[in-house]
Each structure stands twice: as C-alpha cells, then as structure tokens.
Length: 226
Image 1 (cartoon, rainbow, N blue to C red):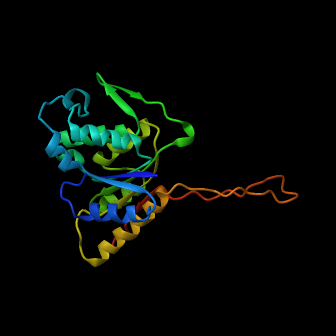
Image 2: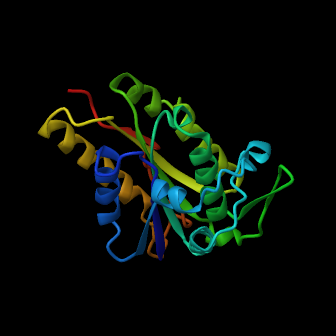
C-alpha cells in the first residue's frame, strides 16, 4: 500500500506535523512519502495568476509533476492543514486543491472538473487533520469544518475518495497534556485509515448465513478540551 502524507501547515514542526507523524506510525507496512506543501509551493509557484480562473494551480514544473504522479498512484492519503487555510496565500490553497484532486484522479480543464476512471473495488481512502482553535474542535466533530479543510473534503468527495475521518488538534501547544491529546487523536485516525480486511465467515448451521452488523468507526474525532 502506498501512502502520501501532505503537511500543509505554514510552520512545520507544530501540532499538525506531530499529528501526521503519529497517524503515519499506525501504518508501518505502508510505503510512505511525505510532501511539504509550502516547500513545494516555494519551488514551483511562478506567480502566473492562472489559478484565479479555475481555483486550481495549472503550473507545469518537474517537482510538481512528480508530486502529481506520486499522488495519482497512491492508495491512501493523509492531509494535515490549518483550519483557516483561506486566510493565507490563496495560491497555496490552489496548489493543495490540485494535489488532492490528483489523488482522486480529478482533472480540471477550462474550469470544468472531470473524474478519472477508477475501479469501484479499489476505492481510495483519505483522512484529514485540522489545526483549529479550541472552540472549533466540537464543530469539526459535527462536520462543520473550517473553510480550508472543508475545501479539501469537498474535493475528495467529488472525486469519489472514501474519507474515513477528520481529527482536530490545537493551533499551538499549551503544555504536555495538549501534545498527548493530539497524539491519541491522531493515532485513532491512523487506525481508521487502515484498510479493514475481514476473514471469510462460515455460516453456523441453522442461521442461514446471517451476519452480525459491525458498529462503524466514528467519522470525526477531536482532542478533548483541557
């Protein structure tokens, strides 16, 4: 299984980067590649303003083309970003939308989106990590995601990717306890991203092959408030 982790936090090494590391550790057998969004942005953006027409970066650069191919071939994706991504340079948002769209084989031409063909049995899986203030944590659990993360979610949804959940962590560390809460939250999300394999069940005589319904994993998780 090939896994790509996109770190879209403006400052590396904070709660988002830590949560991504913890989530990836729950997938030790995956071939993992990390992509730092703003490092890629600084190398590839030419201020051509072409993204203002489609809302998605259209720049052709060797490093960017390699990242797009890598994402298109990946099986799982983890995106860690700040909740208010729209408050930063919109060109960074356009680049993130393009990378996420490439994972779901979603192409943009003249502002129109077309979905690439993927086998229904090989549906891709993705997870989101949102760095949000304390008051936005419960809203993220209810699906009311901040603008930046919501845009990424909509792109994944349009491309047919299965989003297994969204973890909400703080914007900064308030002490060892906040780091521990983010660790638990991220590890839970990483386990949810793991493909669930079920062993074949042999029907018990007299049950006519009835199966017990398994309880689904929670879609949203958030670090509890102190």
